[in-house]
Amino acid sequence: MLVFYDAPYSGNTWKVRLLLRQLEIPHQVVKLDLFKGEARTPGFRARNPFGRVPFITEDDDFSLSESNAILLHLSRGSFLLPADPRSLAHVHEWMFFEQNQLELNIGLPRIFRKAQPAEAERLDSYFRPRAVSALKVLERHLASREWLAGSYSVADIALCAYTQLAPDAGHDLAAYPSVSAWLARIRAQPGFIELE
Amino acid sequence: MLVFYDAPYSGNTWKVRLLLRQLEIPHQVVKLDLFKGEARTPGFRARNPFGRVPFITEDDDFSLSESNAILLHLSRGSFLLPADPRSLAHVHEWMFFEQNQLELNIGLPRIFRKAQPAEAERLDSYFRPRAVSALKVLERHLASREWLAGSYSVADIALCAYTQLAPDAGHDLAAYPSVSAWLARIRAQPGFIELE
Image (cartoon, rainbow over all chains, first blue to last red; front, side, top):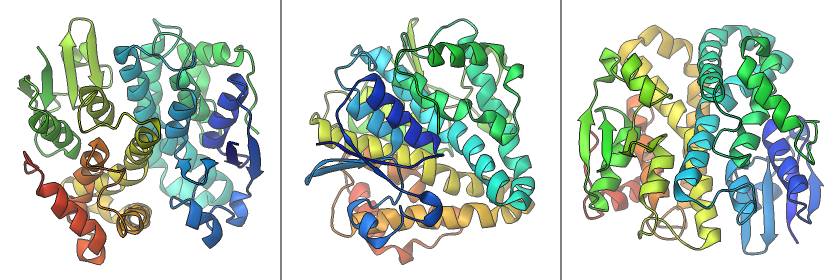
């Protein structure tokens, strides 16, 4: 049985929660409290060397970290992952862009603003232009497309996670009309769930 | 014909240069000077909306950004990409970890130390503990393994790129003996090339 180590608040766990729902994959859930350090205990780290969630185990021989790696693994053979090599390459491209250019530049200021406001202010000149640059890349791409890579895919799920949280990091999504319309299309997909 | 838009200095372009050499893939090279902004001209951005290198084109219908997406695409069917779904998932896991936890936390202070020393100092308390945390995850994993995900793969190429550059960001790799031994194994692979 697939076991999904989940936690509220994180955009990365939300990705996996949404995928499991949209693909109707049977699984058990173990909920962790990140603010109590439950992903960094020695017991959890013995199984999960990355010490982060989301995390899944399929049996004693297989476990997996990294939200986007989990999305790619669990969507194999489904409508959420294209089989054509070129479309698949574009799915990968957007998912790496997400982890490198978008997720940190929105996710970290979001947490700092909540937990360390002085650090949020000190690092604003680092995070803000990078987040704006990433949102502009998305806006240009989506101006002439419905989805990031052909049809609705795990790339849209991955990029949606922190894009929808941009206001929590001080960005007004009204400045990105094509991004906003794309977020609305994702929210209209069957099985959509809100980020807790 | 495959065209590879390359630039010196970058660890991300080095990944693709090494892969093309190790898989002996015929290609043309277009060299850009990043410090002159040659990846951000309107002409280049019309073809490459990400405005970054590495970047490849295969024909008028297909181009691809993001170093790790390029590695996954070009290594299809080769010894550098496992076919087994579980091994492939671990390759993905390490490659997303690289873009999120390692590349920026070493690559950016490396550039700041060269071009903006005051900014390097100001952001040191942000980058340093994150880079150390990533290097410790690698060290623990490699203490009992030769390669990141089974046999030598694109995951090793991807993680090697910025790990080998850690000294340029102020980290002494002597503190990470298993990482150092792994880097030596990579350097001993046929076709290895130095980062320019």
